[in-house]
Length: 275
Figure 1 (cartoon, helix red, strand yellow):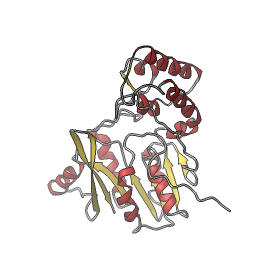
Figure 2 (cartoon, rainbow, N blue to C red):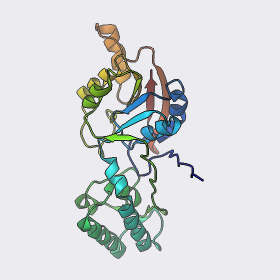
Figure 3 (cartoon, helix red, strand yellow):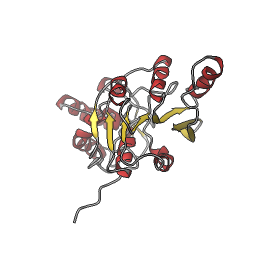
Figure 4 (cartoon, rainbow, N blue to C red):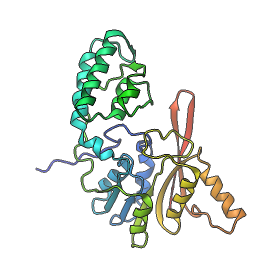
């Protein structure tokens, strides 16, 4: 008997900006789109949107643009589990969520140093286990200077089947758009790094010009576009439409919002626009 494929409702490894909290609105919105369309995930990130589309529409062609090389982290998930299991053992008698100090901290740092010298360390995933909430580093030289906390995950990570059925590419979004923009029955998933939010774990830095360039993808296409109220992109497009001869790419689109909490005193509004 064939085992049922696991459907992920969150990315299998930590990723800043994944759309797990938006899935409740994203899934019903997909119902107005074709189950056999080609879905192009322009800024694939953790791949959660691509995975979700494929799980709902198994006959659809789904292109996941893994520009941030999330795939490498998934391929090394066994190494990550071994490292975190060893840290779990080192910290087994240490109070949960407390600062790691003294000889125990030295032991934790030494174990990570060995892993780093032996090969690959997924510092983003590791950060979620030994750094304060929402704080990430990308290399050992930064980690060893940080204050460590015992937030170690108590179970192994599992990504079995997560990318099954997806066509994985790694291209500049402009090149990917040029490849598919003139084909019939194509839906673009457009989730660029948010303007005016922390994008420290992304591969590149985004400026206002980059966000405005992305809007060309929305001109005359079917799309899902994600932004936040911190970017002011929607207000800018309204201004462009009323003050210039240019059109507003969001005219006639549907908007859904969700409050996102950063910490106890900071939040913003996530926005999904689809057409």
